[in-house]
Length: 275
Image (cartoon, rainbow, N blue to C red; front, side):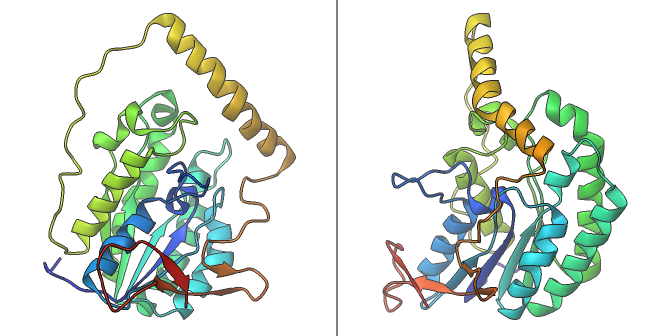
């Protein structure tokens, strides 16, 4: 990518990873990597506009049906698309269908923006990643193919420091605030901006918790997160049911922009307003 790039708008498309879970703010809302990237881009571009359409729990088919056309119509300078990983984690997954839908999304989004950003998402080190690694790697291989074909860039977070279990929240599905911060820096650099930090930097050595502490953590995880997740799968529900993206009007099916409250001063973004 050309360094010192400038972009005037960003639209984020995807699932909980892009929505920002579990980077929780004091008011209970989420501020994930996409929001952090937008704030950084707004510092260098007066009047910068941003829309995050991502919703937790969405499969790639839902992303295509509910977000892709809306994002394409906004004609953003940059669109980020991260999807399909929720599909790979389902016991029954038609990877052919996932590939076809992801391809459909890229074919619609790439011509509608100046730069499409795809991603090889991080995975938490452990038995879940080991079990689903073949599917994940098939998905990411196709991401590379699509990027080469459509001129997209790929942010490669797979098998990096972001796999460290300390980068993941207690639900074992979503990154911590530090994880989201590092993803934002990786996206920032991939877009051609001057690096501000080393997102690949290794964490300090850790001391493995004792057996009792590990079993207590496992019990809490099963009670608070695994059980409800299984319940939703059995009943056909999703954590995203009834939710809309942060900048999406469900009543009209339209996305809307937000912009820094004072776009005459592109300093640190302290507030956003609907535009």
